[in-house]
Length: 210
Image (spheres, rainbow, N blue to C red):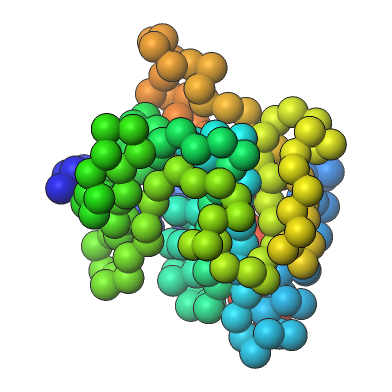
């Protein structure tokens, strides 16, 4: 078991949202995602899914999946969260570290030096999220879902996603750029904070408009 700190997941989630400042263009994009998610939710008997996709499925897409997993329970919405990439690498150790520091727990379900499978949870829930690196069309990622591509390169470089009912490009700066530097911890925490705040915005809007 990878131990967590005393920082609360709920506290980090709420503070991230309360501290966030959105540009008009970013807010417009998040509203479009929330509208599509709400429409899918209503059309599919109050259930939907988000699939976060990035090249290596090791940092930004994993953060998106984990925070959406938490948000669904926080807002009491039946929304599944998935993640995938165009290559299999690993749930990066720095991503694990920044999430456990705010209260998520990681228990190794399947050991692997290259790509371990984690059971991810947090205090107050019995639900488990499986976390590991995988190709975006892995069977674990059950269609239908809304695809959210998170790489900060151009949207046209992202793969065609046949199973997606809709697709949105929501880019984030890659914290990988800070690996091995004095800025590493802050870069991962900031990435987690930004992603958490925008997931909060999306889910809050869906919950309030149902």
